[in-house]
Length: 516
Image (cartoon, rainbow, N blue to C red; front, side, top):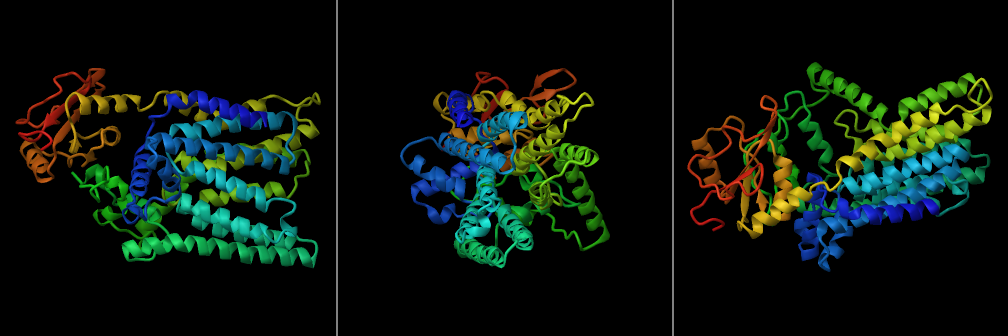
């Protein structure tokens, strides 16, 4: 309880320093939430971005709370729920003493970093799956006829938080059902496990099918979600990147969208199709991608550290409960689906939570048998534990301190002093920065020009897409060791209106009557 109270105090103290931190995915989730708040439910349905974070955020927006702040509050609530579930998991796996204290401190830093540094439903995934683990790994699971339904509800909510969780829950629930059925000691317990599986899958599929039906109605096709297909295309062997990287200017998909990133699925026809099993070259690319991502996955979640601890446990004849292998199964299974595509650290936050429990449980088992030759537990495993789990989240909190405040301030100045609004585009290399600025000044961002476009062609493209303002950002020049504007980034015949008032940014008016 003290750890939860400390989390609330720390979150309240840190919130103002991260309230403007916004990533491209976050722009989409908040923009979709704003659609729900305006009553545009059909326009808000999206097969790329799962709806739960936007659903939670929309009511606060309706009552006047800024969208980014509302989303971050919900993420902080999810972090609190994840931390509470983590305490239960430590109890279930009988982690006590020093390993428990270090695990709780590590989880506190992770939860704060996850909730504050990005606007992403991965935080909701961590919380919902953590509660699901608490239910299915409870000693009372084989006695309760309602536990399966609760697992199904949590699985459906996890799917509504992120598309990937549909496949994970389906596979994980089946694996745990099989394990528990085989290990149940009595026929009654076996029947309860099977009944829980039936009710769990029924609840999960019924609730999930509502959202799947809504997407099918809007897009005219049956789909779990398009994010997996999009990522597969984006990282194919002949891929030239994502559409916004090299596809030139792209119009937002609807009148209230900030950019094309609100519904990337509509731009997949610009990406080269490929089939990992269609040719040896495709299979080779998929295998190499999987191996590369496996390295990232192993370094995240403490997998390598847990293997070292498992080897030590075997050498010292430490008896490990079968529950430890539940953790190993879950960490492995969650990462497995991402390996053929792309792995970002936030994708594996749920695995990192389980890694915290797994390594703490192993440390506790080893400490009980004494690690050192002098019969005293050594400190190096605990130091390594902190380095493995806390260094990246802590670095995230430090590097994102007051993050994106600069873009918010720039947006406010552009809007109030220079009356910049409407449709904007930007020079190459600053897509993320321009997108954030566009969101904060309620503009529409059309992206960046195609590579190697000349000045005359650029001006034709700006006119064709009805762009009101064109941003040229200064980039870091390693030769001069300072920020410098690109030599080919500015339209030759358009007036620059900021006149150096905003450092590292030039703003060109593309129309004789700006904004009109």
